[in-house]
Length: 110
Length: 114
Image (tube, rainbow over all chains, first blue to last red; front, side, top):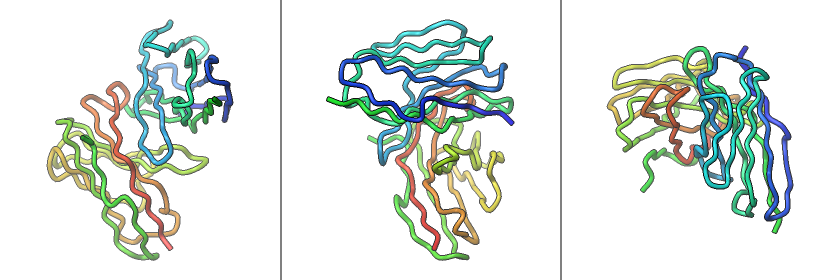
């Protein structure tokens, strides 16, 4: 069964620090990896995606994908209290659907 | 303006009751999805559709029916609701296939089955 596992379950960082979130996926054929952000009482919103091995930067976000180790990480530079949310990692499955992890809860303390 | 709108936002019913959750998207997307989100299980796909009249089975379809009446409208039906279906339900749309196209989610429908 295809799985996406995220770590840590929760993370607390001070304002201005770097936040680093990890995700491993089981399907080496996953075409895409997505990160979604979910605030309380809201639906998830897509943050960034990556399709190729390597890294991708968008603003304060950097994502690294290593297909050999089936690992992807998300780094948020200069974390802000407004970044406090649940972050969901999702990987494309064999049937063309996204498989979601359980999420990492990020709290940025002022 | 919200591009994916769900209704109702909150619903309480009793065991055996009928429930219909509605979703409308104004993104002109072909794909629409119904997910449920539960602590310890995350987001799980119930049903999805890639166009009016089309229906595809997701990963947790038991006890659910769905119908896509137009490109904009996708409904989730629980005909004999059970307490195990108490959950937060999300509708989403995407322009491309689910694993490569960005998903746009609604704000969720909280269902409680007593």
